[in-house]
Amino acid sequence: MFFWDPTFIILIPGLILAFWAQSKVSSTFQRYLRVSSRKGYTGAEVARELLRANGVYDVSVEMIRGHLTDHYDPRHKVIRLSPEVYNGTSLASVGVAAHETGHALQHHHEYFPLQLRNSLVPVANFGSNLAFPLFFIGFLFQSQFGLTLMNLGILLFSAALLFQVLTLPVELNASNRAIAMLSAQGIIARDEEGGARKVLSAAAWTYVAAVAMAALQLIRLLVLRGYRDE
Image 1: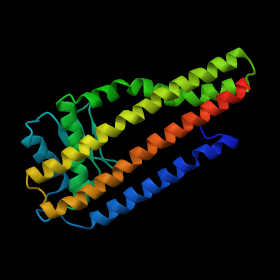
Image 2: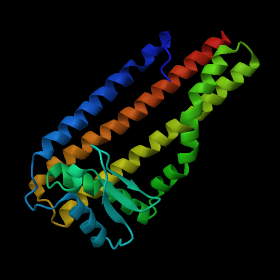
Image 3: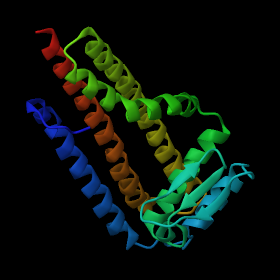
């Protein structure tokens, strides 16, 4: 994926943004992991309470190993929370738990951007796995066959980029749902909303960075493809 050539310089802004975003989400999460919510709900309790309040009874909440491994599994209808979120009572814990519950509610209510993104999962996985091998092999062949492989690699990578772009509104909507639900259910006070929002906003930057990195990578492939036409 990152084979070296002069066009690698195109990726540098994306790499810097990705490094900054990862540092921001880690530092912000750790900061608000030390700030306890006054109501004292654990992340697991938050997820279950928000599901109940929204009339969703077929989604379970489980603990999963790891750090920041929290996610919603739509295939098995399970919200999986890392230990520090599942058992934690901090603003970071309740914010992340509410965010993943937001994804469960998107799934339950058949939120269209989520459905569209999920429909691209097979194509995006296929594209991300094969795009670079096909492009690189095509780059080595000075023939029409090589150009065909390069074009196919670009097409497949474009599908993966589209998946990343569609992820952004899905994640932002889940975060907005999370803050609104936490306030509506009285799980956090109004003056605590800022902390929970900062955690979720920091996490959103990782998705922005992923889109930027993928877009720059596509530009790089197009530049390399252009060399072949010269």
